Length: 205
Image (tube, rainbow, N blue to C red; front, top):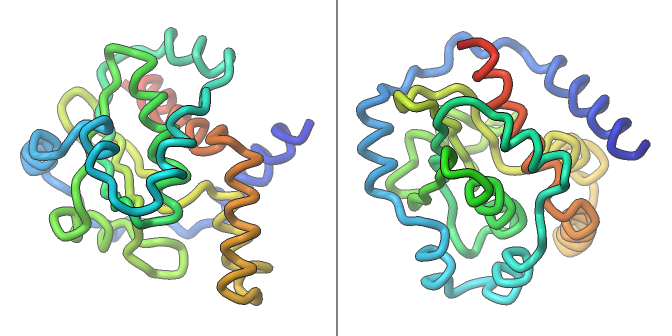
């Protein structure tokens, strides 16, 4: 029931957002080149110097439900996740490991990570609801490296909290409650958001 209510809230939050017709269109050739220049998650993890214990702990978690695994198996097409992330980012460490599980669950899904200095135009072109360029920003690309959607900074339900009740908290209390939310969710909403983007795009083809 909790997840049903969460999905309903997520739907209302997304549906309430204004149309983004003015978003820049990123050329597939450029995204292809950026993707090829990125590093696999395993390489990124080995090079991490900040929040190392949390990176390792989240990577060790299962991260996928049986229902999500079944949907991944049924998913048609080839998909690439181009993630702009950094090891010191509290939202990156709480989401990217679970997207690595998503990518690892199918030979038709893969993920590469690039640094914010390289992917700055992606972050600025896909800002948070309050207008910030943030990590992680994850572009979901189809087989032709065309963008079909994006995951920006954190799951929608957490983002809604961060911009409402969370905005009135001290920095320390905000971080404490945010990490508590991430720990309880264990990557479910992150995977759900990105998997749903791929499913919708597959249906539209």
